[in-house]
Amino acid sequence: MVAPIRVRLAGSNQLSQPAHTLDATESGVRFAGFRGELNPEDIIEIQHRHERGLFRVVWIRVPDKSSEKHVGAQCVEFDKNIWGEEFPNQTDEYEEKE
View (spheres, rainbow, N blue to C red):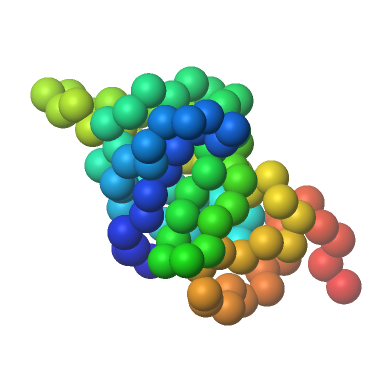
């Protein structure tokens, strides 16, 4: 799912910056096009349309010859879905299969 988003450090007064999703689920997101400063473990606020959610930065990669960052983040708000999409229920590889 590719969608435009706005990203900012949670609890800060900084303006949100544009980015776009590469992949999104109820529990996490992978996004690109971000040019701001982030560190792993930072809590960020992501806005998609009029919905906002809090996510923890898990990893950051900067492609060669680019100022844009690719970021992986995990949702820290239980049962929150800011994407406006229903995602199929998938069994986690660690969950017992019946």
